[in-house]
Image (cartoon, rainbow, N blue to C red):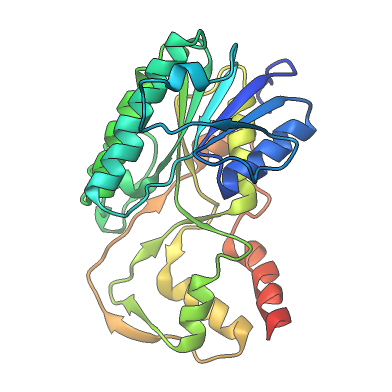
Length: 288
């Protein structure tokens, strides 16, 4: 049964209004919401999204820059550099500044939706994981994201955390380029991967943000976690190139369950890679 939705319309802030945030903002605006996009330089945002020029790293004047009377806040951040300092400053300190600023600006009761990653689970040796699995991150990125999740949970207005796996979609064709160039995949034992189409990232965030009584945590993946070799073999066949060479590797990765998300009523537009990748393959062929 599909969960009940919150009344319309809402005043919504998207903090970190990049590619996915902009797509989400346009979808929300088309549904009648008032949407604000927070970026350091928001001038290029579409007209349907009201720009909010702010830097989460500068907490001193952040409250003064936030829109008033917010009902919902999405946090979709990207660190300036892929290292521990970048993740700490962006996800942990930046989110702390935002949570404090929301309370100071009178929006302490807004629902906070924070985008995290399945990387918080660590390697897990190919095991199945779900929202009840204890996170054991093995990389600095997962450690910092887990810290940021705790910050999100401290927000008094209620929170929802969405842990996405590898995002693919238009323009996100790194795997196709690797296969075309000739690559390897770990086998015997396999390494497992999880993914979600960008369209479903936007759909999931819209959906959980508008639920009346959401869970505080969802895993955002499609229905088919699989080995790297499985998806690479399928893509190679679709591209008409040789399958990747097998190499011996350590068992790794994890298989993420989306049972809680599906039980909430959300229906994936692309339930597996076989439904999601054809449009990317067609896009790539059109450029050749």
